[in-house]
Length: 91
Image: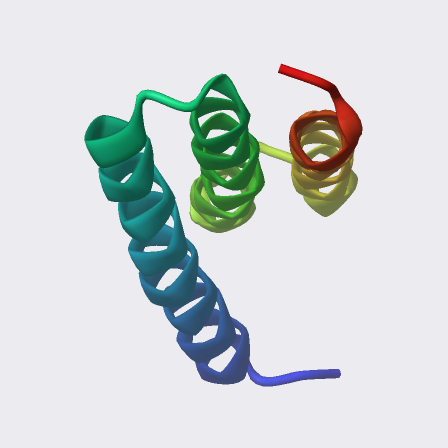
């Protein structure tokens, strides 16, 4: 079994790096007004949000850990879909 502090530290790193990447993508969108960069920022935002929500659900009493995994996976899949769209869509 993995110690809860290890999980908390990894989730914190994911939120920090995901937040920074999302911020950089949004700033790039703000400068260029490129719809592709906007979609990129939204995609990374969903991936980061998934990690945040999963971390919160995981530590709350009364919630199953599998729910946290489902929420994180769903938001990550949505986010990566938006990122893929941003990279390949002609805008």
